Image 1 (cartoon, rainbow, N blue to C red):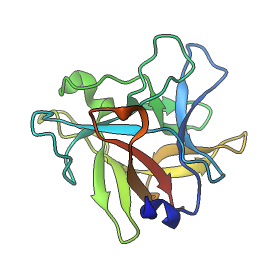
Image 2: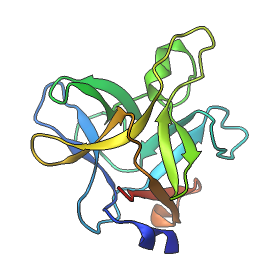
Image 3: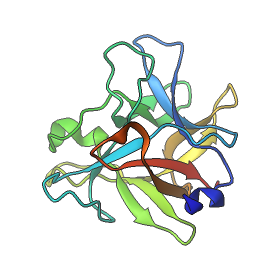
Length: 174
């Protein structure tokens, strides 16, 4: 838990927007809230270890407030932000061209880690590669988006829900 003390901002949350269909984006709280617990699933879950620079699914372990919506992170173009944003509603596993938008990589930085969208689950697909950064939206919320200004994240293990899978919290130093 000491790593959490290095955070300058709050934890990562899933927030429902007043749009149809029911979409929930990923944002960072501005307070000292720890956010929602996360799980990371590697492209090859049988290996069970999360290594740097490999494709992973990221998933909240809590509801988005939308009926039957997945809590797996994905990238989708947000018309209001006029850029690609991190949303929930993705698909866990099933690496390939149909699930490109659901895969992220964790890279080491001097201050912690950065998240990168640059899926390699399809060898013949042309993909966009960008870091996950944070921008303010029109409501003043700090949204996770794809850009060239990566946020630095800190993750720490948590024991909530007595899960058999490792659970983590994440926050940003940006």
